Amino acid sequence: MEITIAASEFKAKCLDILRRLGERRLSRVTITHRGSPVAVMTAPPLSDEESRSVIGSMAGTVWIDPELDLTRPVFDGDMEAEKGILYRE
Image 1 (tube, rainbow, N blue to C red):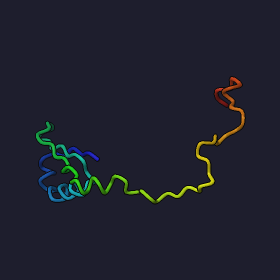
Image 2 (image 1 turned 45 degrees about the horizontal axis):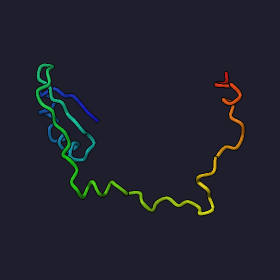
Image 3 (image 1 turned 180 degrees about the vertical axis):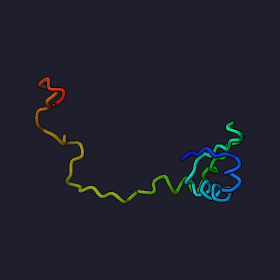
């Protein structure tokens, strides 16, 4: 999530905004002064350990019945598009 905030409001909410950036609830904060952008803050890059914890984090959580053929078509009937029916009203 990205936000744009005036410098005066940023001063009042600075610690909360920093915490939200650190928790990755915010990805980017643009700070303005009199309507013009003067600074941009972004969340710090993920550490190598954090990156690895995301990749493959769901491995082993899905079980597929060995008798299920995932290559077999799901629908064996006639497709309406083959008959020239492209949509129904």
